[in-house]
Image (cartoon, rainbow, N blue to C red; front, side, top):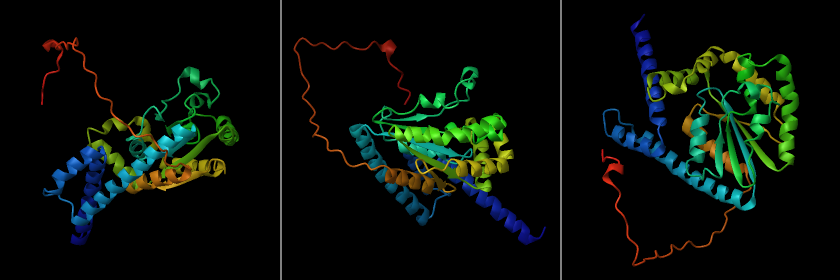
Amino acid sequence: MSEQDFQTKDEALAARQRRLHDDLIDSYDEELEMEVDDRLLHGDEAFDEEARETRRMYFKELFRLQGELVKLQDWVVHTGHRLVVIFEGRDAAGKGGAIKRITQRLNPRVCRVAALPAPNNRERTQWYFQRYAQHLPAGGEIVLFDRSWYNRAGVERVMDFCTDAEYEEFFRSVPEFEKMLVRSGIQIVKYWFSITDDEQETRFQARIQDPLKQWKLSPMDLESRRRWERYTQAKEVMLQRSHIPEAPWWVIQAVDKKRARLNCIRHLLDQVPYGEVQHSTIVLPAREHHDDYLRHPVPESMLVPTYY
């Protein structure tokens, strides 16, 4: 190899390490993320001023959008609106990160996540949509599906977990199923998070190298990596055959995780005709005091040791 080839290889390796480093930082919650960054920003691996400003802008916009999500939540409760948001995409596409930022400031009694495991033996004999239907929202609720009934069009198709007849029946049924839900008053918003082949490999490598994220890798994830092209074909068929006016698909470019999160939240807010709900002024009542009240001390044996 020539000196130029070695230089190109070193630059590619350095770029990959930067991406792995960025992925590590990105995996933490906002508060911890900022704390980690504060330490790194003043060390040998400090970001340049442009990168700092980009992160400041990201958090500023994220917090603003989360404030709007709180308004949307209040409106949903006030009006009894029912909202379903479906998150689909390849493994490591960033669905979980987007869901985390959406739910982070919301009431879990109003906005909840449905992330169903593989069906058990009993569920395999049920009507396919049955186990999903029980997680649909009541009035004043938002349900985010971290993967959904579209498993049949994706992982089940790619991994041969369903027959050709079951696959075709799914596409005959899913438009009617979703139209029925919409007619009943449930709003459905469907997102596909799109990443490149190279980006998925980088994120998988980051999970392999980070002990805090290795649990995210399953044998199914590794097999899905091998079957990238089959997933692409399955995704294309899914978008084509289930993109209906009542519940259209929206594709989010998700190679840049932070941009994907902001774009997703902003778009979701645009899909719901929410408005600000007026609340009465909250007044904290004075605490009552009674002469006969006696507070009993907590036994030392019940106290958690002060480790820190």
